[in-house]
Length: 199
Image (cartoon, rainbow, N blue to C red; front, side):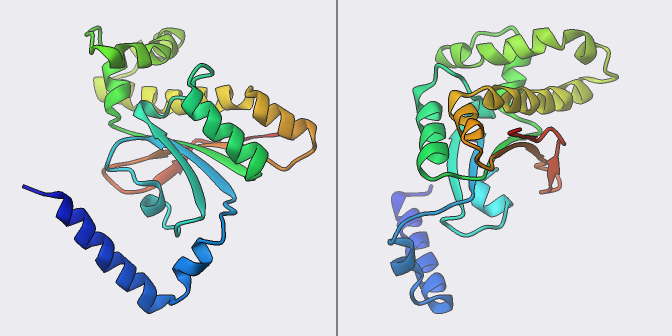
Protein backbone atom coordinates (compact mmCIF):
# COMPACT_ATOMS: atom_id res chain seq x y z
CA UNK A 1 0.00 0.00 0.00
CA UNK A 2 1.23 3.51 -0.80
CA UNK A 3 2.19 5.88 1.97
CA UNK A 4 2.79 9.60 2.09
CA UNK A 5 6.48 8.80 1.66
CA UNK A 6 5.76 7.84 -1.95
CA UNK A 7 4.68 11.42 -2.63
CA UNK A 8 7.59 12.95 -0.74
CA UNK A 9 10.12 10.74 -2.52
CA UNK A 10 8.50 11.53 -5.85
CA UNK A 11 8.72 15.24 -5.07
CA UNK A 12 12.44 15.03 -4.31
CA UNK A 13 13.10 13.12 -7.54
CA UNK A 14 11.10 15.71 -9.52
CA UNK A 15 13.00 18.61 -7.94
CA UNK A 16 16.31 17.01 -8.86
CA UNK A 17 15.21 16.41 -12.47
CA UNK A 18 14.02 20.01 -12.82
CA UNK A 19 17.16 21.48 -11.26
CA UNK A 20 19.36 19.41 -13.56
CA UNK A 21 17.60 20.90 -16.59
CA UNK A 22 16.94 24.42 -15.23
CA UNK A 23 18.99 25.29 -12.15
CA UNK A 24 17.09 28.56 -11.52
CA UNK A 25 13.58 27.17 -12.20
CA UNK A 26 12.30 27.39 -8.62
CA UNK A 27 13.78 30.82 -7.98
CA UNK A 28 12.01 32.10 -11.10
CA UNK A 29 8.73 30.42 -10.09
CA UNK A 30 8.89 32.05 -6.67
CA UNK A 31 8.85 35.54 -8.24
CA UNK A 32 5.18 35.25 -9.21
CA UNK A 33 2.79 33.82 -11.76
CA UNK A 34 1.60 35.15 -15.08
CA UNK A 35 -0.39 32.37 -16.76
CA UNK A 36 -2.26 32.95 -20.01
CA UNK A 37 -4.79 30.21 -19.26
CA UNK A 38 -7.37 29.39 -16.62
CA UNK A 39 -8.12 25.66 -16.86
CA UNK A 40 -11.35 24.41 -15.30
CA UNK A 41 -11.37 20.64 -15.36
CA UNK A 42 -12.67 17.53 -13.70
CA UNK A 43 -11.15 16.30 -10.44
CA UNK A 44 -10.64 12.85 -11.98
CA UNK A 45 -7.11 11.69 -11.15
CA UNK A 46 -6.57 10.51 -14.73
CA UNK A 47 -6.86 14.01 -16.21
CA UNK A 48 -4.06 16.17 -14.72
CA UNK A 49 -4.11 19.44 -16.64
CA UNK A 50 -0.36 20.16 -16.78
CA UNK A 51 0.36 16.62 -17.94
CA UNK A 52 -2.30 16.29 -20.67
CA UNK A 53 -1.52 19.77 -22.05
CA UNK A 54 2.23 19.20 -21.65
CA UNK A 55 2.89 22.56 -19.99
CA UNK A 56 5.16 23.61 -17.15
CA UNK A 57 4.11 24.81 -13.70
CA UNK A 58 3.07 28.45 -13.96
CA UNK A 59 1.44 28.16 -17.39
CA UNK A 60 -2.04 27.18 -16.19
CA UNK A 61 -4.12 28.58 -13.35
CA UNK A 62 -6.22 25.55 -12.43
CA UNK A 63 -9.56 24.76 -10.81
CA UNK A 64 -10.89 21.22 -10.71
CA UNK A 65 -14.13 19.77 -9.39
CA UNK A 66 -16.37 16.81 -10.06
CA UNK A 67 -17.62 17.00 -13.66
CA UNK A 68 -16.03 20.43 -14.34
CA UNK A 69 -19.16 22.33 -13.33
CA UNK A 70 -19.19 26.15 -13.34
CA UNK A 71 -21.99 27.09 -10.97
CA UNK A 72 -22.80 30.74 -10.23
CA UNK A 73 -23.49 29.71 -6.61
CA UNK A 74 -20.15 27.92 -6.09
CA UNK A 75 -17.94 30.42 -4.25
CA UNK A 76 -14.84 28.33 -4.95
CA UNK A 77 -15.07 28.36 -8.74
CA UNK A 78 -16.31 31.95 -8.75
CA UNK A 79 -13.35 33.08 -6.61
CA UNK A 80 -10.91 31.31 -8.92
CA UNK A 81 -12.63 32.86 -11.94
CA UNK A 82 -12.54 36.36 -10.45
CA UNK A 83 -8.86 36.11 -9.54
CA UNK A 84 -7.87 34.63 -12.89
CA UNK A 85 -9.77 37.19 -14.95
CA UNK A 86 -9.52 40.34 -12.87
CA UNK A 87 -6.08 39.97 -11.23
CA UNK A 88 -4.03 37.59 -13.39
CA UNK A 89 -5.78 38.83 -16.55
CA UNK A 90 -5.65 35.47 -18.30
CA UNK A 91 -6.42 35.57 -22.01
CA UNK A 92 -8.03 32.14 -22.27
CA UNK A 93 -10.39 30.12 -20.11
CA UNK A 94 -10.58 26.42 -20.90
CA UNK A 95 -13.37 24.15 -19.76
CA UNK A 96 -12.03 20.62 -20.12
CA UNK A 97 -14.27 17.63 -19.60
CA UNK A 98 -13.50 14.03 -20.40
CA UNK A 99 -15.23 11.01 -21.82
CA UNK A 100 -16.11 8.45 -19.17
CA UNK A 101 -16.67 11.13 -16.51
CA UNK A 102 -18.13 9.50 -13.41
CA UNK A 103 -20.05 12.63 -12.42
CA UNK A 104 -21.71 12.85 -15.82
CA UNK A 105 -22.50 9.13 -15.66
CA UNK A 106 -24.06 9.50 -12.23
CA UNK A 107 -26.20 12.40 -13.45
CA UNK A 108 -27.60 10.15 -16.18
CA UNK A 109 -29.05 7.80 -13.58
CA UNK A 110 -31.78 8.13 -10.99
CA UNK A 111 -29.79 6.95 -8.00
CA UNK A 112 -29.16 9.22 -5.06
CA UNK A 113 -25.49 9.56 -4.25
CA UNK A 114 -25.74 11.63 -1.03
CA UNK A 115 -24.12 15.08 -0.95
CA UNK A 116 -22.85 14.72 -4.49
CA UNK A 117 -26.46 14.43 -5.65
CA UNK A 118 -26.92 18.16 -5.01
CA UNK A 119 -23.70 18.98 -6.85
CA UNK A 120 -24.84 17.02 -9.92
CA UNK A 121 -28.28 18.64 -10.12
CA UNK A 122 -27.18 21.15 -12.82
CA UNK A 123 -26.10 18.19 -14.98
CA UNK A 124 -29.53 16.62 -14.66
CA UNK A 125 -30.99 19.88 -15.96
CA UNK A 126 -28.61 19.74 -18.93
CA UNK A 127 -29.69 16.16 -19.61
CA UNK A 128 -33.36 17.15 -19.48
CA UNK A 129 -32.74 20.10 -21.82
CA UNK A 130 -31.17 17.75 -24.37
CA UNK A 131 -33.24 14.65 -23.65
CA UNK A 132 -34.68 14.39 -27.17
CA UNK A 133 -31.23 14.41 -28.78
CA UNK A 134 -29.68 12.06 -26.24
CA UNK A 135 -32.46 9.47 -26.23
CA UNK A 136 -32.34 9.17 -30.03
CA UNK A 137 -28.66 8.18 -29.99
CA UNK A 138 -27.83 4.68 -31.18
CA UNK A 139 -26.22 3.29 -28.04
CA UNK A 140 -25.77 3.97 -24.36
CA UNK A 141 -22.06 4.71 -24.98
CA UNK A 142 -22.90 7.28 -27.67
CA UNK A 143 -25.40 8.91 -25.30
CA UNK A 144 -22.80 8.97 -22.49
CA UNK A 145 -20.10 10.46 -24.75
CA UNK A 146 -22.45 13.10 -26.11
CA UNK A 147 -23.62 14.05 -22.62
CA UNK A 148 -19.97 14.56 -21.61
CA UNK A 149 -19.61 16.91 -24.60
CA UNK A 150 -22.88 18.72 -23.87
CA UNK A 151 -21.76 19.34 -20.31
CA UNK A 152 -18.62 21.11 -21.55
CA UNK A 153 -20.63 23.10 -24.09
CA UNK A 154 -23.09 24.23 -21.40
CA UNK A 155 -20.28 25.20 -19.02
CA UNK A 156 -18.73 27.35 -21.76
CA UNK A 157 -22.10 29.09 -22.11
CA UNK A 158 -22.29 29.65 -18.33
CA UNK A 159 -18.81 31.10 -18.27
CA UNK A 160 -19.63 33.43 -21.14
CA UNK A 161 -22.38 34.91 -18.98
CA UNK A 162 -20.16 35.36 -15.92
CA UNK A 163 -19.97 38.90 -14.59
CA UNK A 164 -16.18 38.72 -14.51
CA UNK A 165 -15.91 37.60 -18.12
CA UNK A 166 -18.49 40.19 -19.19
CA UNK A 167 -16.58 42.91 -17.31
CA UNK A 168 -13.33 41.96 -19.03
CA UNK A 169 -15.04 42.13 -22.42
CA UNK A 170 -16.63 45.46 -21.53
CA UNK A 171 -13.15 46.78 -20.77
CA UNK A 172 -12.02 45.63 -24.20
CA UNK A 173 -9.74 42.90 -22.88
CA UNK A 174 -8.76 39.95 -25.04
CA UNK A 175 -10.40 36.97 -23.36
CA UNK A 176 -11.73 33.80 -24.94
CA UNK A 177 -13.59 30.83 -23.45
CA UNK A 178 -12.94 27.41 -24.98
CA UNK A 179 -14.41 23.92 -24.62
CA UNK A 180 -12.17 20.86 -24.80
CA UNK A 181 -12.77 17.20 -24.04
CA UNK A 182 -10.19 14.59 -23.18
CA UNK A 183 -10.19 10.95 -24.23
CA UNK A 184 -8.94 8.56 -21.57
CA UNK A 185 -8.52 5.91 -24.28
CA UNK A 186 -6.29 7.94 -26.62
CA UNK A 187 -4.83 10.66 -24.40
CA UNK A 188 -5.92 13.29 -26.92
CA UNK A 189 -7.74 16.56 -26.34
CA UNK A 190 -10.54 17.44 -28.76
CA UNK A 191 -11.62 21.01 -29.46
CA UNK A 192 -15.42 21.13 -29.36
CA UNK A 193 -15.34 24.30 -31.51
CA UNK A 194 -17.52 26.35 -29.15
CA UNK A 195 -15.04 29.13 -28.34
CA UNK A 196 -16.49 32.50 -27.40
CA UNK A 197 -14.67 35.83 -27.42
CA UNK A 198 -15.77 39.32 -26.45
CA UNK A 199 -17.13 41.63 -29.10
